[in-house]
Structure formats: C-alpha cells, structure tokens
Length: 182
Length: 113
Image (cartoon, rainbow over all chains, first blue to last red; front, side):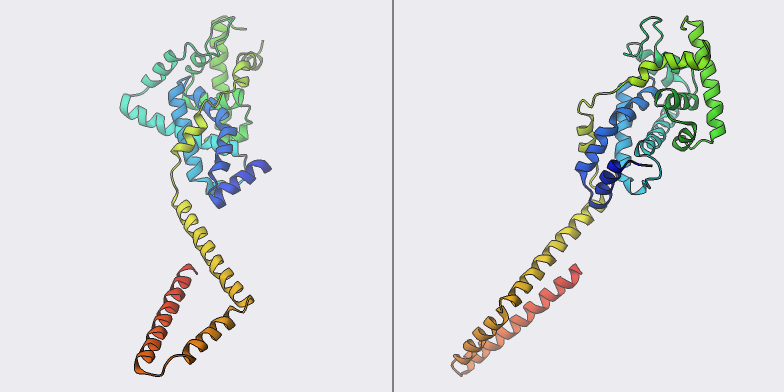
C-alpha cells in the first residue's frame, strides 16, 4: 500500500496536474528506479538513464491508473520492467540475440561495485543469467523485494519466480566459487 | 558458506548503492508531455474563475442596490428626453443594443455551464 505522503503527492498530480508534486515523486524514487535499470542493463549508465526517464514519463501519463493497492515504488518498478523488456525486444530485432548483452558487460568493467578483494564485477556476474533470472535476482537480492511483489512487478507467477531465483542463485554461486569468492 | 550467505555478502555493496540525482529529475520534468487532461483542466479552471467573478459582480451589484441606481438613472434619462422622432429612435437603438448585449452574455454563461 502506498504511503500517506506518496498518496498526497499522487492525488495532487492526478486531480490538479500538479507538476511540482510529480517532481517530488521523481526525486524520491529516481535512485531505486535507476539502480534497478542499471543492474538490468549490466551497468550501461546512459541506456539505464534513458529507460528510467521513459519510466517516469509513462508513470506521469498513466498516473490515473495507479490504484494505491501496492506501493508507488512497486508500481514504478513494474513500469521500469516493461520499459526494459520493450527496449530489449527492439534491440534484438535490430542486432540479433545476445550481442547487446556482451557489449553492456564489457562496458561495465569500471563499475564502482567491483569487489576489491576478488575483482569480480557485479555486472559480469549478472551477465551470466537470463533476463528473467537477472530480473528476479536483482529484485530480491539487491532491492530486497519479496517473492509475491516480484511476481506482481514482473507479471510472472510466483512458482516461476521461485524457479528463476533458484537457477539464478545456483549459477551465481558456482561462478563466484570458481573465481575464488567466498 | 552456503549459497544464500555467499550471495548476500556479494551483493552487500549493491544493496547500499544510492545514485545521485545529478540533474536527472530536471531532465525528466523538462521532458514531460503537456497532457490533454492538463489543458482541459486549465481551461475548466479558467472558466470557473470567470464565472466566479461574474457571480461576485452580480452579488455586489444587488447588495449595494446597483439595480435601484441603474433604474433611477434610466428613468431620469427617459424622462428628460425631448419628445421627438430622433430621441425615440435613439431610445429604440439603445434598447436593441441592450437586448443584444444580454443575449451575448447569456450565451457565454451557458457555454461555461
């Protein structure tokens, strides 16, 4: 359920078209949304910012559809997820399967999140996963979302989310151990 | 170390990551489209304000017996007119223009409603 502060701001936007209220919402949620997209795009900062901007524009134009039954962040994440997948589909149509993934991974080697002790880049690790696995892993292990909320964000069934998490964790754990982490 | 603990430790920094705004919000706000709903809303608010001002003017006119003043002035005007053809035609013209003015105002008010 959306917080009271968020509800007040969202009402201002919905009823009065108050852009300053929407600006406050953007400032409040830009970090988690951009971080999610940065992880999904394997550290591609310009792409993730473009997708994040598209996410907030869609949120503004469709603000009337927000019911308040989930948190505003969950709703934003579900929009961000769809924006990311639409973009992936467009890029696959243009460049073919897998090529974008490799490019994104190689551009992320200077990520600020590199582990100092083992030099394993988080984006390198995430690049091993399929899109759905990466989404579920990112939402659970980085954003701390429970399984039911991941299912709500992605529109995937809870059992499928659990499968993606199990496979994703196995792949990551094996990769980390093979590279001397832990 | 089990898988969950291993991954928990690996993603620890990622969980704490905060991204600075760095002008992002301003860029989003600058890109927002002007919604049809916004335009409709602005027009409605503008019309409501105009209607409110008209209503206030009417109320003040009645409260301060403006109607009485207007009637008195009209009767004095009519009473002091020389009775000839020219003054009657002037009076008729005034009445026609007043009637047209009332019709135009009434139509505008109906549009707002």
